[in-house]
Structure formats: C-alpha cells, structure tokens
Image (cartoon, rainbow, N blue to C red; front, top):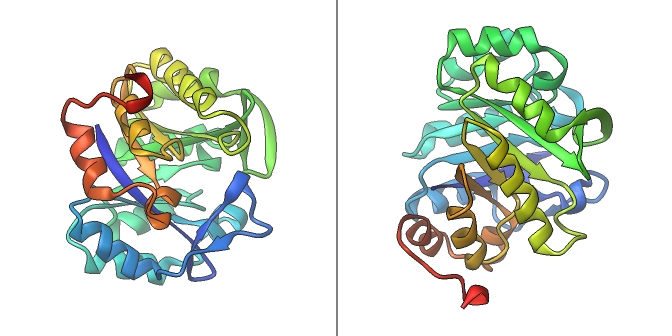
Length: 247
C-alpha cells in the first residue's frame, strides 16, 4: 500500500479542512514548500497536493506554489483541485505533474474524463467525496443525488486508474464507520481505492493495508500534527503489523 502525504493549499497556506469546511480552515504553521521537502526527505512515495481555492472556484489559484513543489522535490506529485477542462489537464502534465485527480469534473463531465484517460493512460484518478452515501461536489458544498459506490462503479469504464475516496463524516463518527465505508468501496470496485483522511493513528495505516483493494492512504492532518510519523507509516504500509486495538 502506498502512502501519499497531502498538502492542501488555500490562499498560499497549508490548511486543514475539519469536517470538510472552508469557512474556518485551520492553517498549519509549516509552509507548503517546507512540508513538501520534509515529506520527500522522509521517503514519501508520492505527494498529493490540492488547490483548495480551485476546488471552490474552478481553475488554478495556487498553481505557482504547486509548480514550485513539483520542481523542488525529488518525488512524484499528483495534483487535485479545480481541474475541470481538458486544457487544464494538459497544463498540469506539461508542468510536471505525475498524476491528475478529477473531482467535480468526474461527476459532471464524463466526456472530459474519457478524453483525459485516453490522452494520459494510467495517470488520471477520480476523487469521490461523500456525506452519508451521497457524493458532494464543488468544493464539498453541493450534494448530488449520486450514491458514492454506484458513481465509482460507473467511472471504472472511463479508464481512470484509481478512485480517491473521501468520507466527509470522518470527524463526527467513530473511526470504524469510515473504515467500513472505505472497505465497502474497495470491495465494490475492480480498480484500487486510495483512502483519504481516514488515517488518524498508525493503527489505521495497518488496518487499511489489509482491507480489500485499498491501494493507498492519503494522510494530511495526522502528519502535520505529529500524531502519525511518516517514516513509521511507510514502514507499516510495507511490512506485517498488528494494530494494537486488534490485539
């Protein structure tokens, strides 16, 4: 299982969107570029960088900063946030992005998804965020009528390489609820699932590793706060480990 440290950027700062809120995001003390260098030095497999302003408005709002990260770290960078046109997909790959994640566009513009997957095979992901079972888009502000698993299943045929799954109820429900929802998503799909925001402790890394069809974990708050050590998470993702709460 791969570990993806995430850096969510809003107004040029690395932020934490508790409960998926953009109204009062908590800004981390570490700058995005310093965080990227720290995670890369610790051995990160790949960085997951999100233009939060882009998710809210569409388009590129922190592109210069994200490009600086791409140019200054020695690990691949996958980019998400506000990528809603074919030209934007091409723009990011031309700037050195390793992979591109489509969120709102994956729900609203299936032809764009197919075109992107045809142009960049094995390099396009779809991000599905849900509250309850329903998918939310436009920066997690608009609820759709789509069921998360049904949407993910329908996206498989477009050629996307993986699904990034975000359970937005993760901060108000017991941790086991998010793990079960993630497990259900993995079981339903033929392509791997990357769990986003589920990891709060090292034990969560170990549990995710043994869930069916989970290809990776995106970790942000737990790394910035120090509740999870990246090097330990990387080791745990690669070797046998028994979570303490299962002993």
